[in-house]
Length: 228
Image 1 (spheres, rainbow, N blue to C red):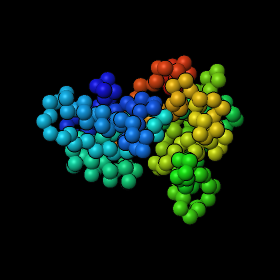
Image 2: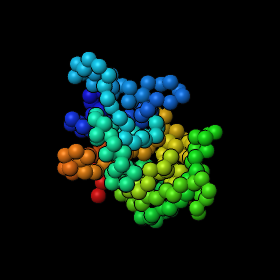
Image 3: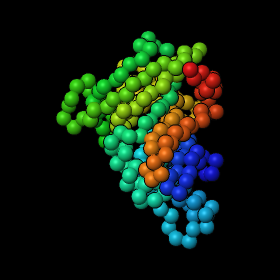
Image 4: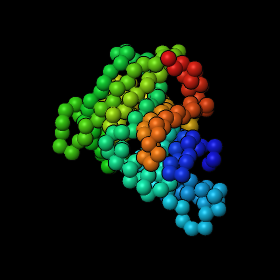
């Protein structure tokens, strides 16, 4: 667990989640990152009682990259408010196919969650029960078989990046649920929560962290050396 910790102080813990890891417990009953971290901290720090650890935000199970946890209730309440106020900047990287697309584009859609198949339905206009979803992408690099996109996420909706990119005809590599032609060997998708930047909720210092690129896929390894 320790090797997945990217940043830690008395109030915060930022983890590099692996594709396939569950952030918070769900109906599958699989052990979650939240439970694993609590147990890790309890043993590492020799804590006698329960360990407080609050989840600030989530990323999808097949996605890899940065997730923030709060180690104190003060940090949790402040960070939760910061998420609502869009005061935490989230940058993602994604590998997509080489379909024709603008170099840079701001996407605005409205998303509604379909509970039956756990999928986001995309609407081009305001619709009852749908939430506005906004992101901006730019092409960082064109590889042999894929394009590497950098995505600036303005809102945090269910499956937002996956659904919006699929809607414009460029599903994320490995994302069968949203139209990719084939799966990735590890069952994950080529979407990485790459960077987080925000003002520390307690110390007020500027925090910026970057996740390493997954090394288990040749396309990611090529992309790692292509940031402009």
